[in-house]
Image (cartoon, rainbow, N blue to C red):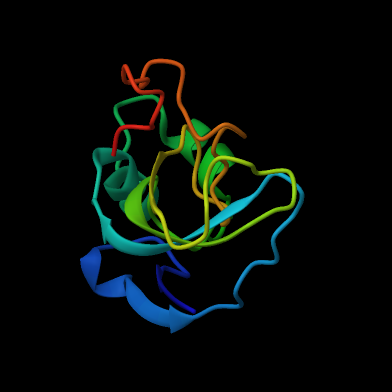
Length: 129
């Protein structure tokens, strides 16, 4: 699969499209074929290590001392559900999916088993996209 990756810290020119292995699906996993994503302040800070004063060492400890610990950028995504683990019951392959991860995405992105975030339930019980 293709992913936008970075192997060192720096400006936007260090981000390249790379071939990475497609992750294997585990029991509660959902694999989403990404159709839309964002570039957030967190992505910019991780890529450039531009930290507020006094956070430089902390940034290196979190993101990697010498090179990025997680080379794939991104924490927000939307797309088509490619496959699901055996314990996932409400998200069929081929359906729409979105994810906002609280940490760097280590694909596949984790979504609650019932497919609904606690703050995102509609009257019909269907997840909002």
